[in-house]
Image 1 (cartoon, rainbow, N blue to C red):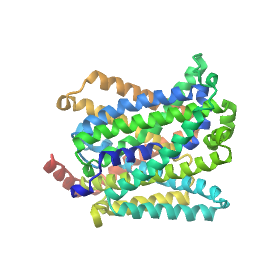
Image 2 (cartoon, one colour):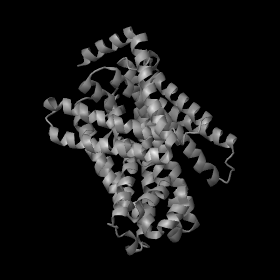
Image 3 (tube, rainbow, N blue to C red):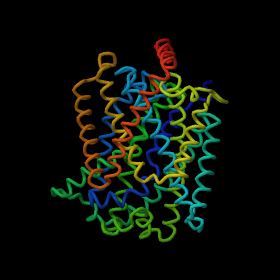
Image 4 (tube, rainbow, N blue to C red):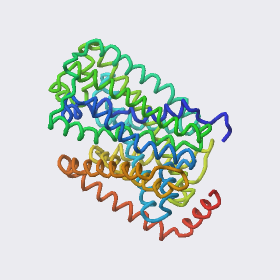
Length: 437
């Protein structure tokens, strides 16, 4: 790919920020307020610290292992090509597919009420088809088009949230944002931080675009840490405004529209429109960046024999049929299924992938010069986060708990079949990796 079409540092940061500040920030505050209470800002700070534990390994490995397969490339280098690493590859690609489907549903859910159209099944499906089709077409024109569009969308989104934060700070009740330190609130803060940790997942997309970035050895680490810092500041600012302008009871009652309701004390009806528009831009940028990352990882894994060969077939501007299959399957999920419970799979999948990235980094520590004790600490923290997540699902979403187990087992079965049915394909991938290494 020519240098003129490489992603700049700013565009890479925009892709990561666009994915992290997605639909969840507009819908998660009602749940977060119920769990963490007035300690909502502190929960976002703690979850950001969890993310930095993982980001350290992503940054160190991503600067040296330049591959659009991102964390799967790290895992392959660290623990080798085996049944587990192959199953993680399948799971990671599927998590992108499910995320795209959820973003499409979220976009339709916000757009139709904003334009005063009844949210019928036909209307929702029409919008889902159009929005996935639009961003598939945009991704068809390559990484530079995606990065430039993401930059503009993220600028608009951050501007809207900046207005919300700036004006909201003027009406904050100081006594409402004082953190509570009693055992009940501290436990709620920890539980909420485990859930909000998943809102920082998007920084990994930087490594999925590393082959298309300018100076990846420098820009991959910078983009990861800058994007997390920006997102943490936005999350904490928004949560301070929400908690400082509404009571916890009001935030809990508002549910999915908590931020829109929180904007009304200082912006009135205009606040509802502003937040709705911000949600549309947030979902658009998240869908755009996730579709790009999903197509990239499908292509890279197919080159290495981790996914079927059809993903490797190229079309214009270095894109692949992995783009069409990723978007087509995501659209099928959006049109045919209720993804409210399936979506929680993404959280479990990424947490497990993070754990294996740290394990791989530990095994590669001699080559990359890292403190093994720090990696052991990070792995222990992530294992605790995963355990807390599964416990939370067991207590509140039993179907999701079983779905995680079934999906992990299914990925192992799929990888086993790919490995035994397509041995020639796998060996070809091994030869390509050896040639590159």
